[in-house]
Image (cartoon, rainbow, N blue to C red; front, side, top):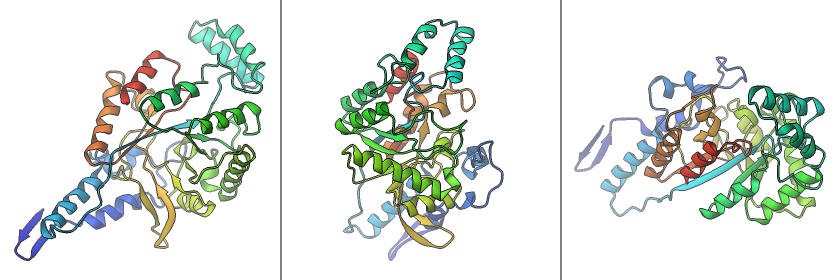
Amino acid sequence: MVDLHVNGATINYDILGLTYWMLNRLEEIGRVDLDNHERFSAKASHAWKHNYLDRPIVDEWLEILKQVIQRVWPNLKVKEHQFQLNVTHDVDRPARFGFATPVNLVKSILGDVIKRKDFSSLLLGPYIRFNTNSELHSKDPFNTFEWIMDISEQNNIKSSFYFICGNTDPKKDADYTLEHPAIQQLLLNIHARGHKIGLHPSYNCYTNPQALMGEFTNLKKICKSLGIQQDVWGGRMHFLRWKHPETMLYWNECGLSYDSTLGYADCAGFRAGSCHEYTAFDPVNHKVLNLKIKPLIVMECTVLHDRYMAIDENPLEVFLELKEKCQKVNGSFTLLWHNSEFISTKFRNIYQGIF
């Protein structure tokens, strides 16, 4: 692959061209072979078909390039990176019962009674629903925010919490609004503990720049009214919906600092071939954007839920192997774990094992 000689070195491989192709997701432009949420899936990707989705292949290529550069120009200093664990939480449902409509409340209770033979929610559900006022109820099973922040702080990490700030699909979007006193108190609690707040645009925002701008404006307005200030605002699309490069351009036009959508729902791994943050680039108009891309490496339901990978035996190993691969290239292991996915002790133990 690399030939070293007196005058330098010859790399018999187009590392920069392949890096450009992967980071800028050229294979996704204009695709119509999409899943039921109109997403480009892992199984349609070149990386899946050629068995390298589980490798940060761009970072591996650039490490080779770095070694060649240092061999040819030993006095040249190359920027060094440090591994980071980037823990994020999409707040789809901050409460299981607290904001439920009467119909959804009944559905949740019946599901517990009929499917899980759990009768506790017969009383607990209505009680929480009608006692969620100025703050989330401490007994609501999805109210795991204090626990999440405790775990992060024990590991010297600041979590990022991404909130839905609008509604473009009543069936897919949140049952809460930022105007509710309990949500505003949650925002204050997160900010007071030094964690980060971000945007989780509603279901159809990925092709609707006006809705995206409206939701971002709403988030900033509410935060400003609460005295919450941040220098950096970013987030992730709901359901990981992404049309490339349009969605990226909308994020840039809205003035958001970063996006962390670029990961697959159906399989964990390195969608962009990298676990490093990088500057977004418009591959159609050939323009550098003011947006940073923070690739998503793994979402908890991708590994654990039946509709995706459904890893039942040693699922923690999947997370740890991906984390180790990020560590080897001094990248960022960006993890998405929803606040509503900590009901079982098993899931909590897996989560804690990642740190």
